[in-house]
Image (cartoon, rainbow over all chains, first blue to last red):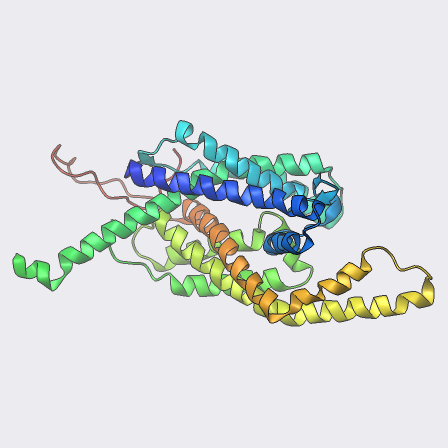
Length: 176
Length: 180
């Protein structure tokens, strides 16, 4: 189903998400860059920021200046995929309607990563870092189509509920 | 659209506690290495619980709110669960390192760094970790909540009444907008 929404608000959310994603990707690269320049304290801070969301096993990370990136190859793929999906968002969905991707497409793009990750954890195979990146990338591309749409809908719903509450308030009833 | 605010807290507390517990446990917590599985899954579960307890239709915005709350609850539970676990892991590592000189004359490279990293257990670092986790889990939870609403939310019922007049404002969002 497609629903009309405020295009300006959706564009603003898209721009903010784009900015946040750029900062996030920069921080991933900043950690090894700082470590390479000898700023180990600052590098440690950036590595610590990403520690809750990634195992950061060095041989599963791409390397910059002889130091691993702050996240593993798969996580990097997800974030780069998210950035690419975000770049495609205005051309694929536009800002004037709320519409989520089909569930089947979501499951299709999730499946390669889920299979690769599960098999890796269970010890069936050890996939190369390029494959990890690719499966993460595929999954990451669809995520902005949920994120931007959902957050834009959240603000629209909040506005509508506030307007409905204002109409139901005693002051407005007195006017009637 | 139902203008009544759904009760977000209960589903977020239940799903967040489960997701945080799974994230904090050793070995099982590895699941978060697959695209924050426990957080995304927990937020999707919260959306499912919300859909079950709400008579009206949910919007993707509702999914975003319940997902964000689930992520924050999960971060708090995760941090609490990890406190005894981190001490246990560090004690184990220290024990192994203490015994190493008996079996080997050379210390493997990087072990000093591991010992020094025990500074990460200080309250300051833990607080920083909690804030970072809460922020990241909330964002990932937003995604999980929206995905959850799109997968488990009730589908909109097409209006049975006559079509709106041209002058009328566009209809408010019914339930989860699905496939585009």
